[in-house]
Length: 625
Image 1 (cartoon, rainbow, N blue to C red):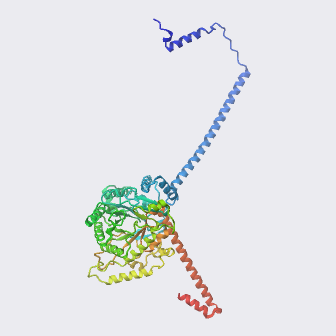
Image 2: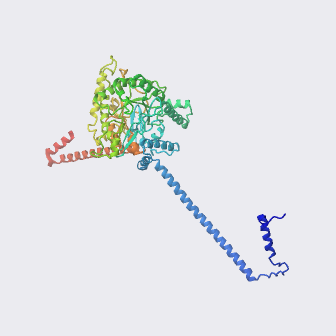
């Protein structure tokens, strides 16, 4: 049965249509085939000419293509070279701490991206850590500190490259100590570290005051805990040992800790020291001194091996009851426990112990009590300064702050910023003066110790204080530090300097010594070891650093200045110090030449008979002077 046309497939319909078209065509199969005529010579000649022209054109095109290819290769090479040059220059520029982009672009960008200052801080830590892993981190170019040697200082028997450090709070959990050392400081302080992890205070807890370059924070000692930080430092130390071919694991760790690697076991960098700040947990009862001391000792047990300096924090304004521990009795008990635990550290060289005190405990009685606890416990030094509960007046004088910033001043927390400098300078002078007097009479030595030693020590202190420039408060007078406190390039310390009991900063032959024994049991045949002062609070430039050093400190530490100035802050401060010292040398040289010239002119006048006895009298007076 045939299907209707509609039911046919498409292929069938196409076949029928093709057949119909074929039937309609005429059949020409019987038509005669035309004979092919031979080509004429002119046609053949034209054909060959056309073929030659085609060959010439193809050859010309090939030559042109080859020339274009060579030109494009040269252009590509030039572009590639320029790209590599720009990339290399950009790498050298971006990774140099002197690059202004870090202060004027990176810091504002972080503040713009992260409204919360704490988030901006954490992002900065993450970025620096990632860059360090790929060797793209910012660093000081050159080796100016070691080559010039004009900023060297001695601290705890170590010769440091410079007197600038970073304060605790920048790297709370020891995530980037190596990257911070690359920025140029000789001291990096990590922490504060608590025995157990704790969250700290609720957020938001950090506030910017941009017009004053200041901060208010109430972190509350947020910490990952002593075990976590110890693990971070241990892995850092073992990585150092492996990178220097000392092996890996506990044996390699012991080689570094024993000093065989010829670097401080904490910093792992010659001429630099790592400080670890420790504190108590917030949950530890404020009235249980034994429990509080146990918190600090727990931190020491975990961290002492990996630290060059242990810093006891009893001055944070954001932990309830912590500042009450600065009373003489509790402070002595806590510091004694820490010193004893540090001396029990399983390491050839023991870490030094310092205590960080509050700028708000500034009465004479409070300073005397803290100094008495320092001497009684055997602590090696004091860090003067922390954030303050007070609110300094804005600068410049009479400046009216914006309403939003004025409201921030009402936030609870510790204030830090340039406005604290004068207070820090005053506290350094007062602590230096009080510590130089030595321990109280009843704690300075055993009853059978000779009293002549005390008298001799006081005489030495008096001679040294007399030798200091009375105009140290002035910035220009502070420049005299390069001749009084800094080591000359090739000069050895004089016998007077070697015999002085408390030079502010002097450089003996490089060596490493263990911490001083507790002052409560000194040897009657040895003089008391002077206490070291660090200063932090409001230090933002090189002139201020010189003033602090001349006031009696050995190291200046910065924190808020880096938050606003970026990773190049330490390099800038050191450069300003060198400029100030250079200006001081030039001023002294000019003054000496002027005095020499005036003396020579007066001598010439004296030899002139026309001036007579009056001229001779002038010369005689000048020679006597």
